[in-house]
Image (cartoon, rainbow, N blue to C red; front, side, top):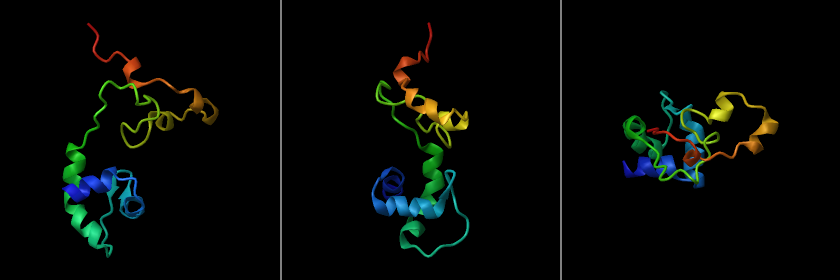
Length: 100
């Protein structure tokens, strides 16, 4: 599980390379590849993805539109024009999720 967690959260080149090979739209490949790392991770990957969550704290540092809430950021899912992306600066903290 620790190796799987590192794999999912690491920005290191080994993790990025392995993600390119074995993950497609947050789903792991089903065919076999020869990799000692992936062999150690794949059995835990689905367990991890089912219980994986993102800690947002107060939400001031997370862009509401550009964060990956699902498979891709909302701005991509909604097909926002590319020239408007630089204007999407709302943070999660700016949205009142719990209204009284």
